[in-house]
Length: 125
View (tube, rainbow, N blue to C red):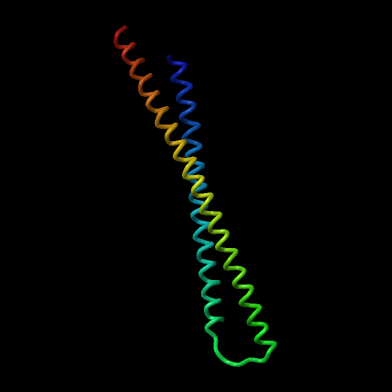
């Protein structure tokens, strides 16, 4: 029984380590999402400025504005795709963490039962 308890303690350490790693990965993804959102907002703001512009320009300057808008639109689409990918990664991490947490809780229940059995055996002898 004591050997089983030692195995459970080792497994507990492993699960705690994995949970910690997942928490760190979740925080990293949240940070990346915030950075991505900030950059996307800046690009969108600049795109709105260009689209709201009124006036006359030479054909070369108009072409430059059009190319700037196309580039900004491409960047905005890229940020949108990146944000969706980050959200998918985050959801996968949440699922994995939930599963690990279930395993951890089950392990802790087993540890508690074994500890109770060992302490009962100790007091009965």
